Length: 456
Image (tube, rainbow, N blue to C red; front, side, top):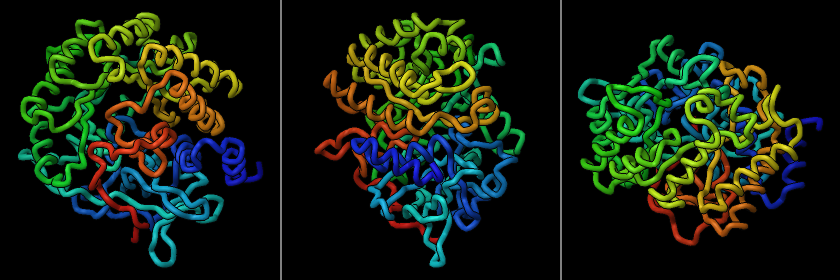
């Protein structure tokens, strides 16, 4: 193809059943987006601007280190953008921001100051940015910002509580080969940014108090408790107790206010029961990549401490505790094709991933996925700066929906509304590609706005 536009249009023509919005969204997620200086606001004081800034809530999700991002590191880009309109008549599409100064996609302001998304020099969509929520303008009693302790993503739908910001799978022989959680911690500390390693439960509760007080429209609907894997203990607690005691405190202070979710390792059934007893409603024991050989190579710590077969057994066992619908393991879509060990054709990669989808969905468990961003400090990111081919991501959306239909499953809970023009899940297009529900999803009325093209 002579241009990125031609490639995208070819895929939209070849796969008309995949929403055109999802094609652009996947390309932005896999390859990142550049920001013109005209599209960056002054966010040196993160609580003073008009635009909600990128919080770096767990991983960097960038195609460069902070020193390599230039102006986008000094003046933070928005957490997410919304695409609408343009020559493709795009429906409202929420996209997580992954900065790549070399991307063919660029956000810039036109002569009237209206933000747009440009590809190959042509404006392809209007861009909306999330307004600064009122709760970000308030600090905790110790001076910490709400954004540091309890950032919100998915256009305000989800409170993302990364309560342990490093991982005990450490070093080349244990770290997942696509994950930059430990580097992200190091780069923020090196830059002098606040980046709390272990968040105090009372700080989390205070931040949630502020969100609850100022989120008058109740846009925030769910919270996720997550962080690095714990192979020994943190603050004297094992993994189930460490993450679980935050859920217990939150549910006691704010009973029923949010849908409680936890992302943790696939733990033994007794530990999973502790999550349930603490008040967690949805469990995400991520399986990362389906293929046995790739799991062993790309997730060496998880293979060493648990093992792929036991990991999968534990996922199935957890359905007996939470119910199959409330067990939603994530995989990292695209690492199947990472050199030098991944599949060399899209056909092979899709066949492998679909095998995994069918395995879990045949048990009533609906996985979800995050579109792989090849962060440059990771082994797979260094070796594969372009990520996986866009065709893989588009065919995955097709295979995902078909497999759900085969097993009579619907969109998983805790992700907001499904459907193009309605979805808020921002780090992949799986929700954009599913059929829209008839009824509005809980928490989607009165969400953070910014639907009109942003003006700078």
